Image 1 (cartoon, helix red, strand yellow):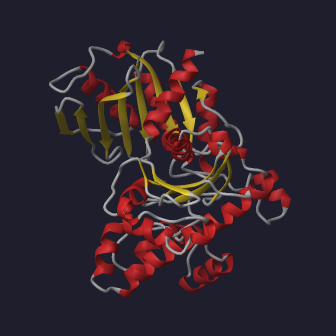
Image 2 (cartoon, one colour; image 1 turned 60 degrees about the vertical axis):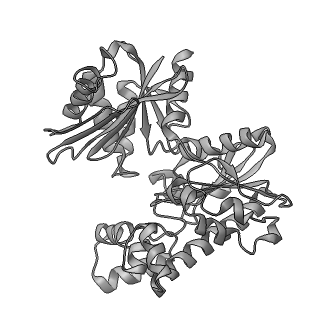
Length: 399
C-alpha cells in the first residue's frame, strides 16, 4: 500500500511517497515558491533527481506538477495515481473541533479554512491545498487530515485556560492549543518502544527543539501540558520568535515603536528570538559558531534557551508528579549535543545524569545518552512526522 503525505505551506507543498509495506520512502520533494514563480525539487530512493522552474500560480498547478513528476519522466516512481491508496495531509490548527485524524470531506475542508483566524499563516494554505488535491487526485482515492493540535486536546482546562475573562474563551476560542503534536506523539511512542516499556506507564518530557521549539509533558501517552500556547509564539526562545514575554512588555514596546497589532506580531514572530537577541542569525549553528568565537550576545542566546528548557522540565516533572524520561528531538534537539549537555547539567536533583561520552558528537540517531546510574533516562529520538501521518492515514482507511 502506497500513501502520499502532503505538508502544505503558504507558498510550498512538501511531499513524501511512502510504501507502507516496509515504511520506506519511495520519493520525496517540494513544490516551492507557489504564487511567486515556482520550482520543484524531487528525489527518489534509488538516487534519481528532478529539479525544474515551473509556473505555480496556485496550489492546483503545484499538485498537477507533483502528479506529473511522480508518474512521468526519468524520476517517475509510479505509472499512475491509481497506485496510491490514500493521501495524508498535515494540518496545523484543528482547534477544539478536530481531536483526531479525520477523513476529508468538503465540510471538513471548510471548517479547516474557517479556523484560519487562529493560524493565518497555515490553515488557509492547508485548505487551498486540500481543494487543489481534490481537483487533481482521483475521486476514489481517500484523503485524510492529521492535526498538529489534536495530540494536545487531552490537556485539562487548568493547563489550557488563560487568566482572561471567560467570555473570551467562549466567544473567541482563546486558549492554549499547543503545536508540534504530531512530532511529540511520534517521538514519545518511539521512546517507549526503545525503552521496552508501555507508554501508559511513563512520564516523559518531550523537547522538540528547532527553529520553532516546544516542550510537552506526556503522562501515560497523553499530552497534559505544552509550552506553545494560543499560537506557536509562546514558550521557549526560538529562531525568530520571542517565546514567553510579559504582556505588558508587548504593549510597552508596541507603543514605543508606534506599531499596529499586526506590526507587533510580525516583530515578535519574525525579528526576535535568536535573531533579535544575538543580532547575528536565527540559525543555532551560526549562534554556536559565534559563541565559540567569544560573542557575548550569542552566548546569551544559548544561556537563555538552556535556562528556559530546564525550567520547563522542572515544572512538568512537578505537574506529572514524577519523571521517567526526557527526550530531545527536532533539528537542534537531535544534533546540538552541546545544548543537550547544557540542559542536563546540574539536574541531578531531578535524577538526570548525562553520559557525556554517549552524548558528545551524537547527531540524528536514536540513542540513550543518560548515565547508567541516572534515575531519569535521557534519549535522543529522531522525529518523523510524515511517517506518523502515513500510519494514521493507513489506520483510518483500513477501517
